Image (cartoon, rainbow, N blue to C red; front, side):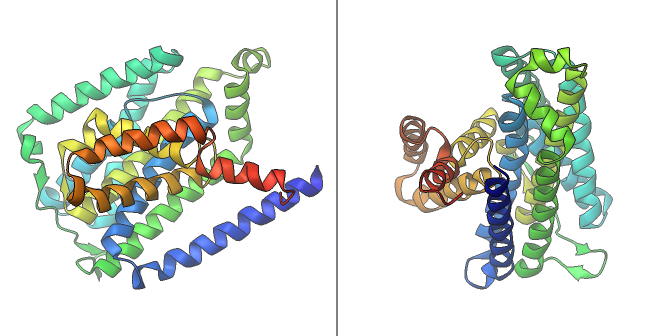
Length: 317
């Protein structure tokens, strides 16, 4: 048992090191804007996976955190004139505050009731963003400047912007990884497996769920604020319920409850959308739906989950 755990930790560290180095050199071989989109959605999916994969709460309102953070960051950058790092921090804090509000209202419910409450709250945010004149309505919030990082580094260069996005993603991924492997993360897993037993052991389950929800919302907001900087706009698409459904697809496709699954799922979804949107138009949604159905039927544990199961069967881990 100890040897298996040691080999798994070694493999995880080796994978992290390889991916880290790949991320450093990737923009020299792959279009940086595409990579930045993958990283933004990868962080969004990792944040969502923290909630669903490790505590068992299905939120259909995570698009609200992604979108609201993007709008707040855009307003701070364009209208207030803050530097990019402050814009990202502002968006992250706004998403965390909104997550706390959502959590207080929804966290005591479970299952479909929790999902529907988060969906209803997110739709309220969507219609609020649509009606408020300052957000630009259906036109979105446009003309967001990338600015200068720390007042020095010009982010108009895609390479400079990429490494900022990469740094933000690495920080967010570290927070998720550290949370999962901390005593707090072990309690979250215990709640997921048997909530009644966790309560009997004296844990304040609602408080742990709320903290996890706020962390997940804040990280989703960090992804949204970074995405706004990359594309220099915030749109209604980011707060629409379709975005909440898309992050569910990314997470399940990559592997629910795995470390690398959300990143793999987001990379696959973004790649397919980028490659197919010009060729098949609106049919891309049908194709993505078909892929999701096939994944549920044939890859119940997702791509990364099935790969880990295969390695375990052959005795590698």
